[in-house]
Image 1 (cartoon, rainbow, N blue to C red):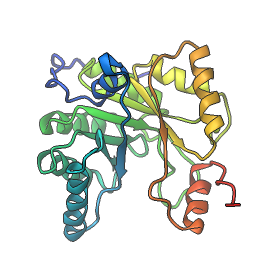
Image 2 (image 1 turned 90 degrees about the horizontal axis):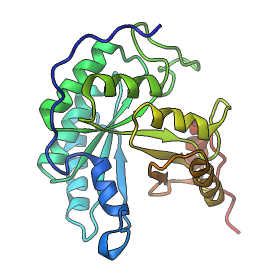
Image 3 (image 1 turned 180 degrees about the vertical axis):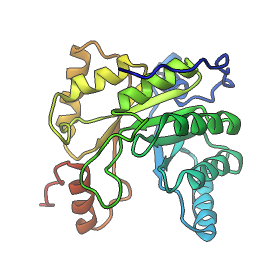
Length: 256
């Protein structure tokens, strides 16, 4: 059974346009000019102070571009939590960009999740991308942490019960099929039903798989936005193959 959730204070009210889901709604809602194209960027947190300065400099250049990213996303894990938060705060304060924390269930307890969410609120970060995550380093099996979350859906539901709609919540979806098998549409639907606002697709190179997945989601009654994932910039063929193997997706066909 799900452990009881202790009472929490009244949900905070995020400032206007501070949640990524609201920014997406503005872009795809159409308005008088129709839907507007947009993109976002995901980064891993830097390991060194020099790496942090270099990353923020690059992010700032993106922010000054004629078409800046709608938001930037930084990955959080047990070993990078503080660096991820510092990177997001800098991207928000220095570069003036909307930011989103990429939060994994791997090794995450409920107490730790509470701390991360309170840190986000204090830093003015109200957007999350929730994933189950990869197995911990040195293991090829994913195991639920004691006092933690079995699935991304469980973490989404936990955040909604504790913080209502204070956070924009994105989740992963898999047009090419779930890595461990199963119904990818129903898997995504379960996370939307738990309170997620939109989906971000696992990277892929087959546009028909994405189109078929979107059609399947619409047929299942899912109206949430589904954002395709793209590997940019394309690294070497060997790196592409390695990333595809890690993510459980087919590699792109060789060039003609």
